[in-house]
Image (tube, rainbow, N blue to C red; front, side, top):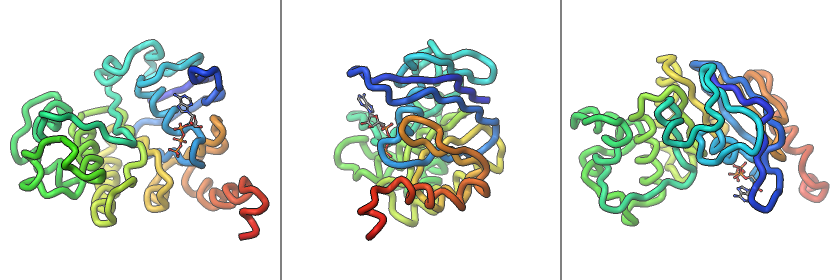
Length: 239
Ligand SMILES: Nc1ncnc2c1ncn2[C@@H]1O[C@H](COP(=O)(O)OP(=O)(O)OP(=O)(O)O)[C@@H](O)[C@H]1O
């Protein structure tokens, strides 16, 4: 469903951050993108969602070349993206943002069900304003609920575990598993979390702007941490 062909991205200073990435992601899969900090995972997700535009190469969604389409058009084509650092919208309530994300009026019950999927008590949060009074973890969960509200073909979550308490995280992992079972759309999750890696159909390891490895969870997981160890500097290994 999603194909990247020779995708490269250079930052403004000319440094090549994404170096010739080819990917083929099948429909209905739960794919986890992992790898060391600074490896290029978020940049890759932004290139897929259209937040950044590729320097060269192609992005193809369901056979359609969307390389030159902007973020709004890609959202209409069915790509939903939950930022690593959620965006705040002063003046809007949680209910407003869920409606906007869904692109339709939501019944009270539907909005509450979305909040419950991310471990938030709807009664307490539905009329809260999206301002600085929300904690980082609360904002993050509301942002994820917004992405879940979208009937998207490709749901991208950037480190959904970041700042989320263990109970809510378990709830979120359950939600990811339910979404996968429904086989409705593809989930692309950037994560370092073992619990998320352990439910992946496919794992893609990104490091130094390249795909270092990819394949089924059974193939990748046994060697994943050994490889990370091999990449450590000698002093670190001695610890
Ligand atoms: N706009 C930019 N200008 C310059 N450098 C950038 C820009 N965006 C990202 N980078 C650099 O590109 C590299 C990859 O960043 P990216 O955020 O994609 O990594 P990541 O794998 O998601 O890391 P993490 O696991 O820490 O979230 C980093 O070295 C980062 O500093």
